[in-house]
Amino acid sequence: MKAIFKDNIKSYLLIFLIGIIAGLSVVLFLELPNNDLWTFSYWSSKTFGFWIFSTSLIVLLSEKRKVAIINTAMYIFIMFLMSAIYMTFCLYWKGYSPFNSLMEVSLNNIYGWLIYSLPSAIICGVLGAILWDGRKNNIHGRILCILPAIFILIEVSFLFYNVIIEHTKLFSAITDLICFILYIKFLRKNIK
Image 1 (cartoon, helix red, strand yellow):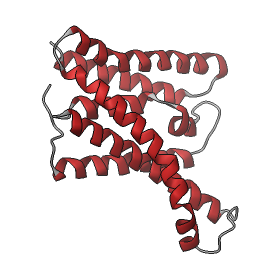
Image 2: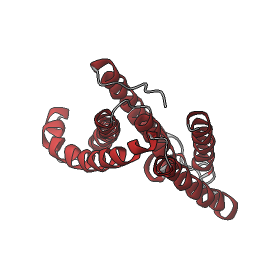
Image 3: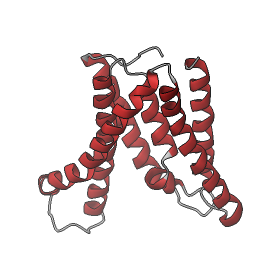
């Protein structure tokens, strides 16, 4: 597989920006109307397909294991941090905060934001280190590469079941299906 993400500042800044975009997408979908059929906020908080897809691509397109770990951890950390900050400020703006200013809110919540963001970043960094072996052209590497696709496919099945039976989560089902198709195309192109 061709490495796009290298061990340099330019690549790390690119991942930082991708993490910001991911965080903004979470915030955006939390604010969209949450009707029964589309259930946009479900995508932001409870659907893993897109996040597995994007994180797997970041790992598999990293030149070294160290780069994959740093990239994955930073991507997830920034995304979680942005959503935590947004949720905190939403509570403040709605009057559910004991603090009187944005400065007080910020200073009193930094620790909570880190506690919310760091565990997921560390777990994803460790998983990124394991998945990076998927770059190797052997049976072990191929199995590792296929595992994210299997998880996404299982989730797609459950989501479409919800669409058919409960008439909910259509947006999550469609985005997961698109991610599954794109990931399979990526694997077919890059694994020989």
